[in-house]
Length: 380
Image 1 (cartoon, rainbow, N blue to C red):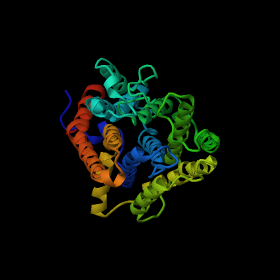
Image 2 (spheres, helix red, strand yellow):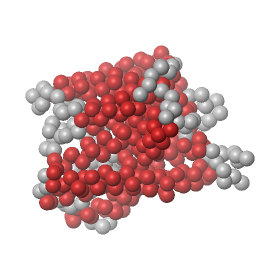
Image 3 (tube, one colour):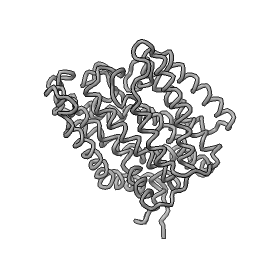
Image 4 (tube, helix red, strand yellow):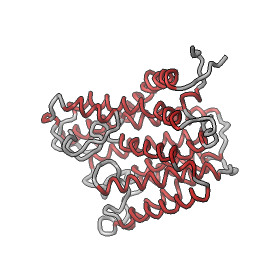
């Protein structure tokens, strides 16, 4: 029988964390929440405030590749592909399911002119919930919200769909590449992503959430650059001597996310250049610097740990409340100033819900699945 005292590494799927990277991931998750809040007042990506918050997903992908490379590249002599997939499933999927359940519970409270939830039959909602929980994208004929999302109950699940694709590609193919071959893959993917950003249909890379052709291409390019770029970074990483990167990096993420749209609707390519620079150059640099600094200040360590702990749950639980907030703003025809108390409540409530889900659901479920699915030795 398995012991009750199980190492955290057994179900966290990583070696000891880079504390500062955890903190930066949490800051990026908060910018995503704010980016989504302002969708209620935007007519398009052109006029949305916190305009480039969607780039946080690329930051997440780069960090994911870095952490997976650090955690697993030296384990393959003793670890099977099946075990690796199980570990990633244990780490990621409990919150995918929770996001789908919260989305289903909230669905009929989100009615507005943009999506008439009253037309959705009670029988269709469980189907949509199961599809979201199993990360099966919804096609247009069964997409119950009617706005073209892969996962209409919890929109951000789209990035987990691509995260799983990256995980499978890593296990089957990418991990076997030499560092030189991996560098070539990253260069080619960077060129493809930059081409899409600059000359693509939108002048940005805020894509991947729908089953349309440009979303599939753009979402794939985002993953194919960022995930291998993080992996490459983990292979060539040599720490630099840096200080204060948590605060500098956090401020950088906030500013880069909040920069207004560049070039307007007349010069889409200008914003595409900005997106490409952020993802291909700045974000890998931030991950490199974030992994270099060793934090000694206890307050900063605690803050980074908290932000890191809630980052993934926050990303996965906040969006059903964004749908609700959007409907409230549109139904009441509210300005941002009028709805500010609701916006503050949403951010604080999402953080509290994320922490509650982490402690009461995610961590216990991961421990349970680890006991059932992995070969974990008793820790004396």
